[in-house]
Amino acid sequence: ETGVTQTPRHLVMGMTNKKSLKCEQHLGHNAMYWYKQSAKKPLELMFVYSLEERVENNSVPSRFSPECPNSSHLFLHLHTLQPEDSALYLCASSQGTDWQPQHFGDGTRLSIL
Amino acid sequence: QKEVEQDPGPLSVPEGAIVSLNCTYSNSAFQYFMWYRQYSRKGPELLMYTYSSGNKEDGRFTAQVDKSSKYISLFIRDSQPSDSATYLCAMSRGRDTGRRALTFGSGTRLQVQP
Image (tube, rainbow over all chains, first blue to last red):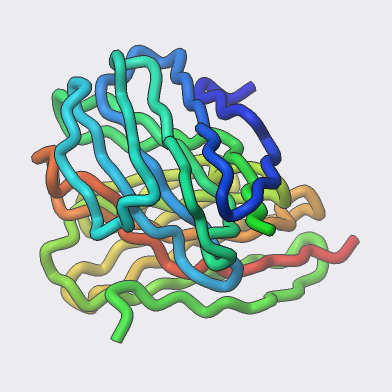
């Protein structure tokens, strides 16, 4: 059973819709991450949060808007997405006081119609 | 040129074989190295991680890092059908928050035939 839970597992939305992805970690970590995994491409880092502050935005379009209300929860708000945004969106967490590996959730499979 | 290169496979081996998975990288700033396993419809699962050059063993898995050659490997002994998955190498530059994010290889798909 993963210590990082993502909901929903699957999401189909139109290009004009607004939806949100949710991630919750039960590991006591204080850093959280969003990654995008597209077919035949490496995982791409989108955002990094440490102690609820965004510390990295990897040139992600503004139609993706992250939110980290506390160290256990991370959201990715979506609006006006494009078909190329269809992918698996993965959340990860790690303990931030020293280097520790990241632990991943099972992702949300997003399809844009 | 990609920062991390990984042969996508697929790699098909018979049960019981020794499997060798490899990644090369170009950025000498990478200090931490990981291997993840990803089953279909699941997230990446951490297998092993290491900081220094040399070998690290855990059961049937051995991770090897050669920083001078910028080359990392994962060996799987006595491979099982349950090892069939995509294996991802990943690396990061350091402890600081901004350097901790992972750079991934594209993954190698492994199929272990019973």
